[in-house]
Length: 263
Image 1 (cartoon, one colour):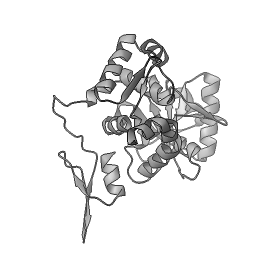
Image 2 (image 1 turned 60 degrees about the horizontal axis):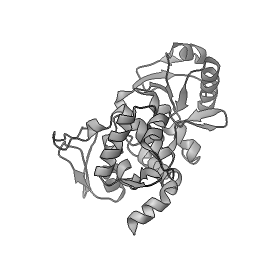
Image 3 (image 1 turned 90 degrees about the vertical axis):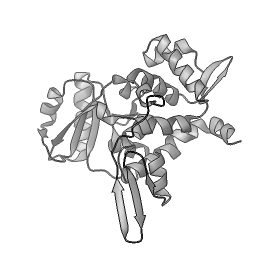
């Protein structure tokens, strides 16, 4: 996210892994996608395991709720000890507040900055297809088939983002499906392609990615926090959509905490 902020403000940058964005006079160099190497002492990326991310999603889904460690574990479908470890890590970084009522995030902005910088979308498996149908037709059919076959699913990426901000435009269907894709592929008459295609079906590395999926008319979409994470690795329009989701869908729920941090 730090790189995104630099680009939005016209500031160039160069990190230790070779990612850069330099634009001045007649010189333009932009390179992204290289993993930042972290020392063993400061390696925090490994902390963002699927179980930890389940807990973090629950905390983001309920901004003003105070949690006991037990209730948090039950909601996130993790062991109480795992929820307790998340609590200790967040407290160590001063991103957590506690009271007699329980615990909740105090700096969701800093946590989301760090999480998004360490998020690895490549853990999930993507398969790309082409279809002659329109985006709306594909999404409607996908929702109908998944409902009929009881397949957990949620539209993701721009397919989800436009539900939160209808101004966003997109021409590609993206969705998570926690199941064997064969029946869906057959029902939608999709043709797998090695090119760009107009349909991306993802097998999530953990079903926690679908937690909190929201219903918009006839389709389910990933909640704002997961939509944000899925778009963070996309340059250009993905960053613009992320800003919109943060400002209009995530940030408002955390107004008391963010106001306290700024005081």
